[in-house]
Image 1 (cartoon, one colour):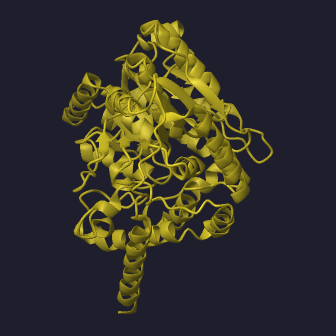
Image 2 (cartoon, one colour):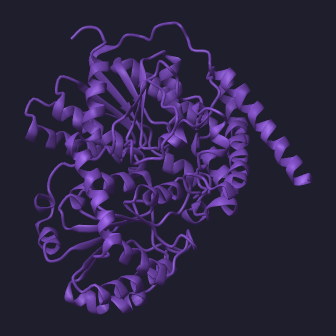
Image 3 (cartoon, one colour):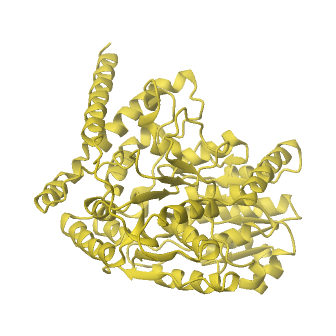
Length: 526
Protein backbone atom coordinates (compact mmCIF):
# COMPACT_ATOMS: atom_id res chain seq x y z
CA UNK A 1 0.00 0.00 0.00
CA UNK A 2 2.78 2.40 0.98
CA UNK A 3 4.69 1.63 -2.21
CA UNK A 4 1.61 2.38 -4.32
CA UNK A 5 1.03 5.62 -2.42
CA UNK A 6 4.62 6.72 -2.89
CA UNK A 7 4.50 5.87 -6.58
CA UNK A 8 1.23 7.76 -7.00
CA UNK A 9 2.68 10.81 -5.26
CA UNK A 10 5.80 10.68 -7.41
CA UNK A 11 3.73 10.51 -10.57
CA UNK A 12 1.68 13.51 -9.45
CA UNK A 13 4.81 15.51 -8.68
CA UNK A 14 6.33 14.64 -12.04
CA UNK A 15 3.16 15.52 -13.95
CA UNK A 16 2.91 18.88 -12.17
CA UNK A 17 6.56 19.56 -12.87
CA UNK A 18 6.05 18.78 -16.55
CA UNK A 19 3.03 21.06 -16.78
CA UNK A 20 4.91 23.91 -15.11
CA UNK A 21 7.95 23.38 -17.31
CA UNK A 22 5.92 23.35 -20.51
CA UNK A 23 4.05 26.48 -19.43
CA UNK A 24 7.30 28.23 -18.59
CA UNK A 25 8.85 27.51 -21.98
CA UNK A 26 5.75 27.65 -24.17
CA UNK A 27 5.82 31.38 -24.84
CA UNK A 28 7.40 32.04 -28.23
CA UNK A 29 8.46 35.49 -29.29
CA UNK A 30 6.26 37.07 -31.96
CA UNK A 31 9.25 39.07 -33.17
CA UNK A 32 10.40 37.75 -36.55
CA UNK A 33 13.93 36.37 -36.56
CA UNK A 34 16.83 38.45 -37.78
CA UNK A 35 17.28 38.16 -41.54
CA UNK A 36 20.82 37.04 -42.27
CA UNK A 37 22.97 36.87 -45.39
CA UNK A 38 21.30 34.99 -48.22
CA UNK A 39 22.51 31.43 -48.99
CA UNK A 40 24.67 31.33 -45.86
CA UNK A 41 24.46 28.65 -43.19
CA UNK A 42 26.41 28.31 -39.96
CA UNK A 43 26.71 24.87 -38.37
CA UNK A 44 27.64 24.85 -34.69
CA UNK A 45 28.40 21.45 -33.21
CA UNK A 46 30.60 19.50 -30.86
CA UNK A 47 33.53 17.76 -32.55
CA UNK A 48 33.21 14.25 -31.05
CA UNK A 49 32.38 11.73 -33.77
CA UNK A 50 29.17 10.31 -32.31
CA UNK A 51 27.81 13.81 -31.75
CA UNK A 52 29.02 15.46 -34.96
CA UNK A 53 28.84 12.92 -37.80
CA UNK A 54 25.38 14.01 -38.97
CA UNK A 55 26.51 17.66 -39.22
CA UNK A 56 29.64 16.81 -41.21
CA UNK A 57 27.68 14.55 -43.57
CA UNK A 58 25.01 17.21 -44.13
CA UNK A 59 27.61 19.93 -44.70
CA UNK A 60 29.22 17.73 -47.35
CA UNK A 61 25.85 17.12 -48.99
CA UNK A 62 25.36 20.89 -49.21
CA UNK A 63 28.74 21.32 -50.92
CA UNK A 64 27.96 18.51 -53.33
CA UNK A 65 24.35 19.30 -54.22
CA UNK A 66 23.92 23.00 -53.34
CA UNK A 67 27.16 24.82 -54.17
CA UNK A 68 25.36 28.18 -54.09
CA UNK A 69 25.22 27.89 -50.26
CA UNK A 70 28.12 29.34 -48.30
CA UNK A 71 28.84 26.84 -45.51
CA UNK A 72 30.42 27.99 -42.24
CA UNK A 73 31.18 25.62 -39.38
CA UNK A 74 32.02 26.50 -35.76
CA UNK A 75 33.54 23.73 -33.65
CA UNK A 76 36.72 22.68 -31.86
CA UNK A 77 40.23 22.03 -33.20
CA UNK A 78 39.82 18.32 -34.18
CA UNK A 79 37.00 19.28 -36.55
CA UNK A 80 39.29 21.33 -38.78
CA UNK A 81 41.01 18.47 -40.68
CA UNK A 82 37.68 16.70 -41.23
CA UNK A 83 36.22 19.80 -42.86
CA UNK A 84 39.32 20.30 -45.01
CA UNK A 85 38.98 16.72 -46.22
CA UNK A 86 35.32 16.98 -47.20
CA UNK A 87 35.89 20.38 -48.84
CA UNK A 88 38.57 18.83 -51.05
CA UNK A 89 36.45 15.82 -51.92
CA UNK A 90 33.40 17.93 -52.76
CA UNK A 91 35.23 19.63 -55.64
CA UNK A 92 35.89 16.24 -57.23
CA UNK A 93 32.14 15.87 -57.73
CA UNK A 94 31.15 19.54 -57.87
CA UNK A 95 33.96 21.78 -59.14
CA UNK A 96 32.01 24.91 -58.19
CA UNK A 97 31.81 23.88 -54.52
CA UNK A 98 33.38 26.30 -52.07
CA UNK A 99 35.52 25.38 -49.09
CA UNK A 100 33.79 25.23 -45.72
CA UNK A 101 34.85 28.20 -43.59
CA UNK A 102 35.97 26.85 -40.22
CA UNK A 103 35.58 28.94 -37.07
CA UNK A 104 37.68 27.43 -34.31
CA UNK A 105 36.38 27.52 -30.75
CA UNK A 106 38.60 27.92 -27.66
CA UNK A 107 40.80 24.92 -27.04
CA UNK A 108 40.10 22.97 -23.87
CA UNK A 109 36.37 23.76 -23.74
CA UNK A 110 34.98 20.87 -25.78
CA UNK A 111 32.27 18.49 -24.62
CA UNK A 112 34.91 15.80 -24.04
CA UNK A 113 37.04 18.20 -22.01
CA UNK A 114 34.02 19.04 -19.88
CA UNK A 115 33.50 15.34 -19.20
CA UNK A 116 37.14 14.99 -18.20
CA UNK A 117 37.00 18.03 -15.93
CA UNK A 118 34.06 16.44 -14.12
CA UNK A 119 36.16 13.35 -13.39
CA UNK A 120 33.95 11.03 -15.42
CA UNK A 121 35.55 8.00 -17.06
CA UNK A 122 34.25 5.38 -19.47
CA UNK A 123 33.83 2.98 -16.56
CA UNK A 124 31.59 5.54 -14.83
CA UNK A 125 29.36 5.86 -17.90
CA UNK A 126 28.71 2.14 -18.36
CA UNK A 127 25.57 0.90 -16.61
CA UNK A 128 23.03 -1.93 -16.77
CA UNK A 129 19.56 -1.32 -18.22
CA UNK A 130 16.40 -0.77 -16.22
CA UNK A 131 16.10 -0.19 -12.50
CA UNK A 132 19.70 -1.18 -11.82
CA UNK A 133 20.96 1.65 -14.01
CA UNK A 134 18.39 4.42 -13.57
CA UNK A 135 20.46 6.40 -11.06
CA UNK A 136 23.36 6.54 -13.53
CA UNK A 137 20.99 7.50 -16.36
CA UNK A 138 19.56 10.40 -14.33
CA UNK A 139 22.99 11.55 -13.16
CA UNK A 140 24.57 11.47 -16.59
CA UNK A 141 21.77 12.81 -18.80
CA UNK A 142 21.28 15.88 -16.61
CA UNK A 143 25.02 16.49 -16.98
CA UNK A 144 25.20 15.90 -20.75
CA UNK A 145 22.50 18.51 -21.41
CA UNK A 146 24.97 21.22 -20.34
CA UNK A 147 28.29 19.90 -19.00
CA UNK A 148 30.18 23.20 -18.93
CA UNK A 149 30.84 25.30 -15.85
CA UNK A 150 29.21 28.72 -15.75
CA UNK A 151 32.47 30.45 -16.70
CA UNK A 152 33.19 28.08 -19.61
CA UNK A 153 29.60 28.29 -20.82
CA UNK A 154 29.86 32.09 -20.83
CA UNK A 155 33.19 32.00 -22.70
CA UNK A 156 31.72 29.81 -25.43
CA UNK A 157 28.52 31.86 -25.54
CA UNK A 158 30.47 35.08 -26.07
CA UNK A 159 32.74 33.54 -28.71
CA UNK A 160 29.77 32.10 -30.60
CA UNK A 161 27.88 35.37 -30.39
CA UNK A 162 30.82 37.03 -32.12
CA UNK A 163 30.95 34.33 -34.81
CA UNK A 164 27.21 34.66 -35.50
CA UNK A 165 27.60 38.44 -35.83
CA UNK A 166 30.58 38.03 -38.16
CA UNK A 167 29.02 35.38 -40.42
CA UNK A 168 25.50 36.85 -40.30
CA UNK A 169 23.94 33.56 -41.53
CA UNK A 170 20.46 33.15 -42.89
CA UNK A 171 20.27 29.96 -40.81
CA UNK A 172 22.11 28.53 -37.80
CA UNK A 173 22.08 24.73 -37.50
CA UNK A 174 22.40 23.65 -33.87
CA UNK A 175 23.47 20.60 -31.87
CA UNK A 176 21.09 19.66 -29.04
CA UNK A 177 24.09 18.88 -26.82
CA UNK A 178 25.78 22.27 -27.33
CA UNK A 179 23.83 24.56 -25.01
CA UNK A 180 26.07 27.66 -25.27
CA UNK A 181 25.37 27.75 -29.02
CA UNK A 182 21.63 27.40 -28.44
CA UNK A 183 21.69 30.30 -25.99
CA UNK A 184 23.72 32.45 -28.39
CA UNK A 185 21.43 31.84 -31.38
CA UNK A 186 18.26 32.41 -29.38
CA UNK A 187 19.54 35.49 -27.58
CA UNK A 188 20.24 37.07 -30.98
CA UNK A 189 16.87 35.94 -32.32
CA UNK A 190 18.46 34.11 -35.23
CA UNK A 191 16.58 31.77 -37.52
CA UNK A 192 17.83 28.38 -36.38
CA UNK A 193 17.17 24.69 -36.77
CA UNK A 194 18.18 21.54 -34.93
CA UNK A 195 19.84 18.53 -36.52
CA UNK A 196 20.11 15.44 -34.36
CA UNK A 197 21.08 11.76 -34.57
CA UNK A 198 18.70 10.95 -31.71
CA UNK A 199 15.50 8.91 -31.91
CA UNK A 200 12.10 10.61 -32.09
CA UNK A 201 10.84 8.70 -29.07
CA UNK A 202 13.63 10.15 -26.91
CA UNK A 203 13.16 13.67 -28.30
CA UNK A 204 9.40 14.18 -28.31
CA UNK A 205 7.99 12.13 -25.43
CA UNK A 206 6.00 15.03 -24.00
CA UNK A 207 4.16 15.63 -27.28
CA UNK A 208 2.55 12.18 -27.05
CA UNK A 209 -1.11 12.00 -25.95
CA UNK A 210 -2.61 10.34 -22.87
CA UNK A 211 0.59 10.56 -20.85
CA UNK A 212 2.27 8.09 -23.19
CA UNK A 213 5.67 9.23 -21.94
CA UNK A 214 4.88 7.38 -18.70
CA UNK A 215 3.49 4.06 -19.81
CA UNK A 216 3.51 3.61 -23.58
CA UNK A 217 7.07 4.28 -24.69
CA UNK A 218 10.19 2.67 -23.22
CA UNK A 219 12.21 5.25 -21.33
CA UNK A 220 15.84 5.87 -22.28
CA UNK A 221 18.25 3.40 -20.77
CA UNK A 222 15.56 0.90 -19.82
CA UNK A 223 15.96 -1.74 -22.52
CA UNK A 224 12.23 -2.41 -22.13
CA UNK A 225 10.78 -3.74 -25.41
CA UNK A 226 8.18 -1.99 -27.49
CA UNK A 227 5.25 -2.52 -27.29
CA UNK A 228 5.75 -2.55 -23.53
CA UNK A 229 4.42 -5.79 -22.02
CA UNK A 230 1.68 -5.23 -19.44
CA UNK A 231 3.87 -6.76 -16.77
CA UNK A 232 6.56 -4.13 -17.34
CA UNK A 233 4.37 -1.01 -17.47
CA UNK A 234 4.79 -0.35 -13.70
CA UNK A 235 8.57 -0.56 -14.13
CA UNK A 236 8.48 1.89 -17.04
CA UNK A 237 6.32 4.31 -15.02
CA UNK A 238 8.79 4.18 -12.13
CA UNK A 239 11.78 4.72 -14.43
CA UNK A 240 10.00 7.54 -16.30
CA UNK A 241 9.18 9.37 -13.09
CA UNK A 242 12.80 9.15 -11.98
CA UNK A 243 14.13 10.25 -15.37
CA UNK A 244 11.79 13.15 -16.12
CA UNK A 245 11.92 14.55 -12.61
CA UNK A 246 15.73 14.58 -12.77
CA UNK A 247 15.74 16.15 -16.23
CA UNK A 248 13.38 18.90 -15.13
CA UNK A 249 14.97 19.57 -11.75
CA UNK A 250 18.58 19.58 -13.09
CA UNK A 251 19.97 19.66 -9.52
CA UNK A 252 23.59 19.64 -10.67
CA UNK A 253 23.02 22.71 -12.82
CA UNK A 254 21.50 25.16 -10.37
CA UNK A 255 24.70 27.02 -9.53
CA UNK A 256 25.59 27.35 -13.21
CA UNK A 257 22.09 28.53 -14.06
CA UNK A 258 22.28 31.19 -11.34
CA UNK A 259 25.66 32.38 -12.65
CA UNK A 260 24.42 32.57 -16.24
CA UNK A 261 21.29 34.44 -15.19
CA UNK A 262 23.48 37.05 -13.51
CA UNK A 263 25.21 37.52 -16.88
CA UNK A 264 21.96 38.01 -18.77
CA UNK A 265 21.55 34.45 -20.10
CA UNK A 266 18.10 33.83 -18.71
CA UNK A 267 16.65 30.95 -20.76
CA UNK A 268 15.85 27.98 -18.55
CA UNK A 269 18.11 25.07 -19.47
CA UNK A 270 16.17 21.90 -20.17
CA UNK A 271 16.37 19.11 -22.71
CA UNK A 272 12.64 19.58 -23.29
CA UNK A 273 12.61 23.28 -24.17
CA UNK A 274 14.46 22.81 -27.45
CA UNK A 275 11.61 22.03 -29.81
CA UNK A 276 9.41 24.96 -30.75
CA UNK A 277 6.74 25.16 -33.44
CA UNK A 278 8.67 27.81 -35.38
CA UNK A 279 12.04 26.00 -35.27
CA UNK A 280 12.73 23.35 -37.96
CA UNK A 281 13.94 20.02 -36.64
CA UNK A 282 15.86 17.43 -38.69
CA UNK A 283 16.48 13.87 -37.58
CA UNK A 284 17.98 10.74 -39.13
CA UNK A 285 15.06 8.66 -37.90
CA UNK A 286 13.72 6.37 -40.61
CA UNK A 287 10.00 5.80 -40.21
CA UNK A 288 9.32 2.08 -40.19
CA UNK A 289 12.72 1.41 -38.62
CA UNK A 290 12.10 3.33 -35.40
CA UNK A 291 9.81 3.13 -32.41
CA UNK A 292 6.48 4.42 -33.78
CA UNK A 293 5.08 7.45 -31.95
CA UNK A 294 1.57 8.86 -32.18
CA UNK A 295 2.50 12.50 -32.76
CA UNK A 296 5.36 13.84 -34.87
CA UNK A 297 5.37 17.66 -34.76
CA UNK A 298 4.69 19.17 -38.20
CA UNK A 299 8.04 21.00 -38.36
CA UNK A 300 10.04 17.78 -37.93
CA UNK A 301 11.72 16.21 -40.97
CA UNK A 302 12.59 12.52 -40.70
CA UNK A 303 15.27 12.12 -43.33
CA UNK A 304 16.53 8.65 -42.50
CA UNK A 305 20.19 7.69 -41.93
CA UNK A 306 22.62 10.55 -42.48
CA UNK A 307 26.01 9.18 -43.50
CA UNK A 308 29.27 10.44 -44.96
CA UNK A 309 30.55 8.56 -48.00
CA UNK A 310 33.43 10.33 -49.72
CA UNK A 311 35.05 7.49 -51.66
CA UNK A 312 35.18 3.72 -51.85
CA UNK A 313 37.31 1.47 -49.66
CA UNK A 314 39.33 0.60 -52.76
CA UNK A 315 40.20 4.27 -53.20
CA UNK A 316 40.94 4.86 -49.51
CA UNK A 317 42.81 1.62 -48.71
CA UNK A 318 43.57 -0.79 -51.58
CA UNK A 319 45.19 -3.29 -49.19
CA UNK A 320 42.13 -3.45 -46.96
CA UNK A 321 39.89 -3.74 -49.99
CA UNK A 322 41.87 -6.74 -51.29
CA UNK A 323 41.57 -8.42 -47.90
CA UNK A 324 37.81 -7.81 -47.77
CA UNK A 325 37.30 -9.51 -51.12
CA UNK A 326 38.72 -12.76 -49.74
CA UNK A 327 35.62 -13.77 -47.72
CA UNK A 328 32.36 -12.48 -46.20
CA UNK A 329 33.39 -10.32 -43.24
CA UNK A 330 32.04 -9.65 -39.75
CA UNK A 331 32.90 -6.07 -38.73
CA UNK A 332 33.42 -5.38 -35.01
CA UNK A 333 33.48 -1.62 -34.40
CA UNK A 334 32.23 -0.27 -31.08
CA UNK A 335 32.77 3.38 -31.91
CA UNK A 336 35.38 6.05 -31.35
CA UNK A 337 34.99 6.31 -27.57
CA UNK A 338 34.99 2.64 -26.60
CA UNK A 339 38.23 1.05 -25.40
CA UNK A 340 38.62 -2.65 -24.65
CA UNK A 341 39.24 -3.77 -21.09
CA UNK A 342 40.99 -7.10 -20.72
CA UNK A 343 37.77 -8.86 -19.70
CA UNK A 344 35.90 -7.53 -22.74
CA UNK A 345 38.84 -8.40 -25.01
CA UNK A 346 39.14 -11.98 -23.71
CA UNK A 347 35.43 -12.63 -24.16
CA UNK A 348 35.39 -11.26 -27.72
CA UNK A 349 38.61 -13.02 -28.74
CA UNK A 350 37.22 -16.39 -27.68
CA UNK A 351 33.87 -15.65 -29.32
CA UNK A 352 35.55 -14.74 -32.62
CA UNK A 353 37.65 -17.92 -32.50
CA UNK A 354 34.52 -20.00 -31.86
CA UNK A 355 32.67 -18.23 -34.69
CA UNK A 356 35.45 -18.88 -37.19
CA UNK A 357 35.81 -22.51 -36.17
CA UNK A 358 32.14 -23.06 -36.87
CA UNK A 359 31.89 -20.83 -39.95
CA UNK A 360 34.98 -21.55 -42.00
CA UNK A 361 33.73 -19.30 -44.81
CA UNK A 362 33.96 -16.08 -42.76
CA UNK A 363 36.63 -13.62 -41.67
CA UNK A 364 36.59 -10.85 -39.02
CA UNK A 365 37.72 -7.20 -39.05
CA UNK A 366 38.03 -5.99 -35.46
CA UNK A 367 38.66 -2.34 -34.57
CA UNK A 368 40.54 -2.71 -31.32
CA UNK A 369 42.09 -0.27 -28.85
CA UNK A 370 43.23 -1.35 -25.39
CA UNK A 371 41.95 0.41 -22.29
CA UNK A 372 44.88 1.69 -20.20
CA UNK A 373 44.92 1.40 -16.43
CA UNK A 374 45.22 4.38 -14.05
CA UNK A 375 48.96 4.61 -14.70
CA UNK A 376 48.52 4.53 -18.48
CA UNK A 377 49.85 0.96 -18.83
CA UNK A 378 48.02 -1.67 -20.86
CA UNK A 379 47.60 -5.40 -20.48
CA UNK A 380 49.50 -8.07 -22.42
CA UNK A 381 48.43 -9.68 -25.69
CA UNK A 382 47.78 -13.04 -24.01
CA UNK A 383 44.05 -12.56 -24.60
CA UNK A 384 44.65 -13.18 -28.33
CA UNK A 385 45.76 -16.77 -27.71
CA UNK A 386 42.55 -18.33 -29.17
CA UNK A 387 42.91 -16.08 -32.23
CA UNK A 388 46.53 -16.75 -33.11
CA UNK A 389 45.84 -19.34 -35.83
CA UNK A 390 43.39 -16.94 -37.46
CA UNK A 391 45.69 -13.93 -37.14
CA UNK A 392 48.43 -15.97 -38.78
CA UNK A 393 46.30 -17.22 -41.67
CA UNK A 394 44.74 -13.79 -42.23
CA UNK A 395 41.13 -14.58 -41.28
CA UNK A 396 41.26 -12.02 -38.46
CA UNK A 397 42.50 -8.47 -38.91
CA UNK A 398 42.79 -6.26 -35.79
CA UNK A 399 43.14 -2.53 -36.42
CA UNK A 400 43.77 0.23 -33.87
CA UNK A 401 41.96 2.70 -36.15
CA UNK A 402 40.02 2.13 -39.35
CA UNK A 403 41.60 4.24 -42.08
CA UNK A 404 38.38 4.26 -44.10
CA UNK A 405 34.94 5.75 -43.55
CA UNK A 406 32.61 3.31 -41.73
CA UNK A 407 29.91 3.82 -44.35
CA UNK A 408 32.26 2.91 -47.19
CA UNK A 409 33.15 -0.33 -45.36
CA UNK A 410 29.52 -1.26 -44.86
CA UNK A 411 28.64 -0.50 -48.48
CA UNK A 412 31.33 -2.74 -49.99
CA UNK A 413 28.91 -5.67 -50.01
CA UNK A 414 31.53 -7.75 -48.16
CA UNK A 415 30.26 -7.00 -44.61
CA UNK A 416 27.71 -9.62 -43.54
CA UNK A 417 27.29 -8.41 -39.95
CA UNK A 418 28.03 -5.15 -38.14
CA UNK A 419 28.82 -5.59 -34.43
CA UNK A 420 28.47 -2.19 -32.75
CA UNK A 421 27.72 -0.59 -29.39
CA UNK A 422 24.10 0.27 -30.03
CA UNK A 423 24.64 3.98 -30.59
CA UNK A 424 22.53 6.04 -32.98
CA UNK A 425 25.41 6.18 -35.44
CA UNK A 426 26.13 2.45 -35.46
CA UNK A 427 22.46 1.56 -35.81
CA UNK A 428 21.71 3.99 -38.64
CA UNK A 429 24.94 3.36 -40.57
CA UNK A 430 24.21 -0.38 -40.72
CA UNK A 431 20.55 0.27 -41.47
CA UNK A 432 21.40 2.58 -44.36
CA UNK A 433 23.88 0.09 -45.81
CA UNK A 434 21.46 -2.84 -45.51
CA UNK A 435 23.73 -4.82 -43.17
CA UNK A 436 22.38 -7.02 -40.30
CA UNK A 437 23.48 -5.95 -36.83
CA UNK A 438 24.61 -7.19 -33.44
CA UNK A 439 24.18 -4.46 -30.80
CA UNK A 440 26.24 -4.60 -27.59
CA UNK A 441 24.81 -1.67 -25.59
CA UNK A 442 26.81 0.10 -22.90
CA UNK A 443 24.78 3.09 -21.69
CA UNK A 444 21.73 5.34 -22.15
CA UNK A 445 20.01 5.07 -25.54
CA UNK A 446 22.27 2.17 -26.57
CA UNK A 447 19.79 -0.15 -24.85
CA UNK A 448 16.87 1.37 -26.76
CA UNK A 449 18.62 0.95 -30.11
CA UNK A 450 19.59 -2.61 -29.19
CA UNK A 451 15.94 -3.36 -28.47
CA UNK A 452 14.93 -1.56 -31.67
CA UNK A 453 17.30 -3.76 -33.68
CA UNK A 454 15.23 -6.78 -32.64
CA UNK A 455 11.86 -5.02 -32.91
CA UNK A 456 12.58 -3.97 -36.51
CA UNK A 457 14.03 -7.40 -37.30
CA UNK A 458 17.44 -6.36 -38.63
CA UNK A 459 19.60 -7.97 -35.95
CA UNK A 460 19.98 -9.00 -32.33
CA UNK A 461 20.79 -7.52 -28.95
CA UNK A 462 23.90 -9.48 -28.04
CA UNK A 463 24.29 -10.73 -24.46
CA UNK A 464 20.95 -9.22 -23.43
CA UNK A 465 20.89 -11.17 -20.18
CA UNK A 466 24.25 -9.83 -18.98
CA UNK A 467 24.40 -6.33 -20.57
CA UNK A 468 26.50 -4.27 -20.40
CA UNK A 469 28.88 -7.19 -19.80
CA UNK A 470 29.51 -10.18 -22.03
CA UNK A 471 30.57 -13.77 -22.09
CA UNK A 472 32.28 -15.53 -24.98
CA UNK A 473 29.27 -17.82 -25.30
CA UNK A 474 26.63 -15.11 -25.68
CA UNK A 475 28.82 -13.12 -28.09
CA UNK A 476 29.36 -16.21 -30.23
CA UNK A 477 25.66 -17.05 -30.21
CA UNK A 478 24.69 -13.50 -31.22
CA UNK A 479 27.08 -13.43 -34.18
CA UNK A 480 26.09 -16.91 -35.30
CA UNK A 481 22.42 -15.91 -35.20
CA UNK A 482 22.95 -12.96 -37.52
CA UNK A 483 25.07 -14.90 -40.04
CA UNK A 484 22.86 -18.01 -39.82
CA UNK A 485 22.30 -19.42 -43.32
CA UNK A 486 18.88 -20.71 -42.24
CA UNK A 487 15.51 -18.97 -42.04
CA UNK A 488 16.35 -16.72 -39.07
CA UNK A 489 19.42 -15.22 -40.69
CA UNK A 490 17.76 -14.99 -44.09
CA UNK A 491 14.84 -13.03 -42.62
CA UNK A 492 17.22 -10.52 -41.00
CA UNK A 493 19.24 -10.13 -44.16
CA UNK A 494 16.14 -9.58 -46.27
CA UNK A 495 14.75 -6.91 -43.93
CA UNK A 496 18.13 -5.20 -43.70
CA UNK A 497 18.45 -5.28 -47.49
CA UNK A 498 15.02 -3.69 -48.01
CA UNK A 499 15.79 -0.86 -45.57
CA UNK A 500 19.16 -0.32 -47.20
CA UNK A 501 17.62 -0.01 -50.65
CA UNK A 502 15.03 2.44 -49.30
CA UNK A 503 17.68 4.65 -47.70
CA UNK A 504 20.07 4.55 -50.66
CA UNK A 505 17.31 5.60 -53.04
CA UNK A 506 17.16 8.97 -51.21
CA UNK A 507 19.85 9.29 -48.48
CA UNK A 508 19.05 11.34 -45.39
CA UNK A 509 21.93 13.78 -45.81
CA UNK A 510 20.54 14.92 -49.18
CA UNK A 511 17.00 15.27 -47.84
CA UNK A 512 18.19 17.47 -44.96
CA UNK A 513 20.62 19.44 -47.15
CA UNK A 514 17.80 20.26 -49.55
CA UNK A 515 15.63 21.65 -46.74
CA UNK A 516 18.52 23.64 -45.26
CA UNK A 517 19.29 25.12 -48.68
CA UNK A 518 15.67 26.32 -48.94
CA UNK A 519 15.87 27.95 -45.52
CA UNK A 520 19.14 29.72 -46.31
CA UNK A 521 17.50 31.29 -49.37
CA UNK A 522 15.41 33.45 -47.01
CA UNK A 523 18.20 35.94 -46.34
CA UNK A 524 19.14 39.29 -47.84
CA UNK A 525 21.57 40.17 -50.62
CA UNK A 526 23.46 37.70 -52.78
